[in-house]
Each structure stands twice: as structure tokens, then as C-alpha cells.
Image (cartoon, rainbow, N blue to C red; front, top):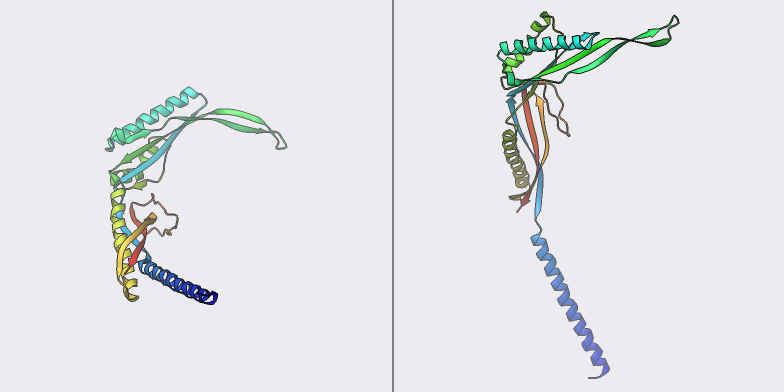
Length: 248
């Protein structure tokens, strides 16, 4: 075989190898294309209305005196009257939680004839204590918080805060809402797939989005960061679920 024939043979061989290699590459690309799974990403929503089954109510009272011992005795008398008052209304003693006593010193500022501050004069002590009632008897404590003026009529300086409302079965409620959100997401994805002429496959990924609780008829805005209402007895909980579904 001369040089010309050798060159022709080698060229033919290289072309054949190139054709085989191209076919292999194209075949692999086609195979990978068939293995690629398209998906639909949707957000499902689950919500539940519920009524709080736990109430937490806090009030505070105080006494002032020039003598610390006398101020403490007055405050202690008030505490005994308050405890007696609540237990007479049917509140269990274990539901009554008294805080520790806080003590503050009181002063009056002294000024000269031209209004310059010249010093301070000690005027006595003020002692404060709070009481918290945590109960599942929501309506009873709710009504009691409105009737607390009876303590004021007994000469006790009692300050009442607004009750806070909670729900003790929130974990179970969240599971129900996640199930509802999953069904809602599948329904949305099914509609999209059918409109595109495809069939919906399995759920591949899911991640929880925003969970929040707002008061019913409270005019609260939904927040992307989530909210947790404690001021309303009747509430609405909602949850979003981000889902990825296969398309066949």
C-alpha cells in the first residue's frame, strides 16, 4: 500500500469513528432528555376557624407609704383580699399566680425661685405586685375580668389588663391544615396539567410556607412573616404549603 492509499485509508477510518462517536453522543442526549422530569410548582392553602380554649388574664395592684414595712403590710392585706375575692368567684387557687413584689423609691424634685433644680426629696415607697390567672374556663374568667371593679370598691388599687386567648390543640389543628393545603395544591396542579395536555404525577417536594393566626372580624392584615393573634377569642388559622409535582 503506497502513501496515497495510506492517507485515504486513515481519512476514511477517522470519518467512521467520528460518525460512531456522534451517534453515541446523540443517543445519550436523547436518553437524558427522556429521563428529565418536568414539574409544576404550586402553593396550597389550608385554614380553620376555631374558638380559644385557654385564657390568660393579668392584673396588678400597688400600695405606697413613707415606711417600707407599712407599705408591704398594706400590699399583703390587699393580696389576701384579692385571693379571697377570686376564690369566692370559683377560681381555683392553683390558677392564681402572684408575682414577686417590686419596690420603687419616690422622690419630688426641688426647685429654687428661678426654676432651677436644687435637689430631690424622698417621699416614700411604692410596692407593686401582679396576679395572673390561667384557666380553660374562658367565659368565666372573661366575665370576671369585667367585674373586677368590685375590688376597686373595696379600696384596692387594682389595674386590669386585657385577657389573652390561646388554643391548646394547635398542633393537631396544624396537621389538619397541612393535609388540606396538600389537597388544595394537588387540585391546583391538576388543573394546570390538564390545561397543558399533561398528566399530573407524584408529589416530589413540599415545604411549609406562612403559618398565622388572626382574629375573626378583627380587620387584621395577613403578613408574609406570620402573625399570632392573642387578643381575640375567635380566630382563624391558615397555612401555606409549597409543593412540586411531576408531570408525565
